[in-house]
Length: 88
Image (cartoon, rainbow, N blue to C red; front, side):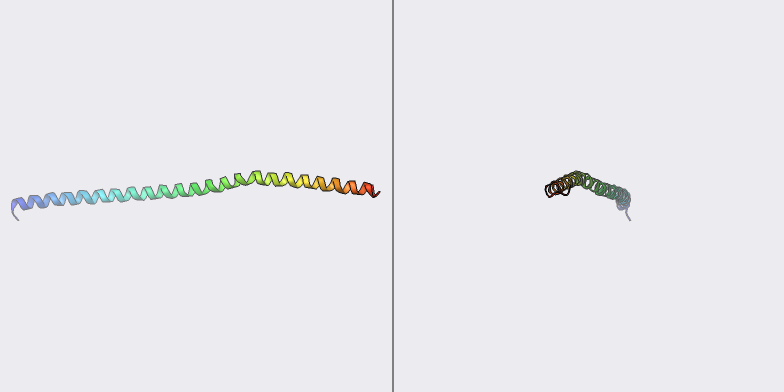
């Protein structure tokens, strides 16, 4: 090889080596990003479940309150009927 061609070859070889290293670094960075995204995804799933549980609490509380009120109304109605027909 001529001297100019050898210099160009060495320069290109250095560039290829540099690009290979940069690609390896980029690959490691992408793996880290994917790992972090997986963690964020799992955390979002957990937060979604917790949010749904929190949303359900007032509904369960209301069902409990309305059930208790209904029981008292039925009990009062039965007591009234019992008094009217002379059972109490």
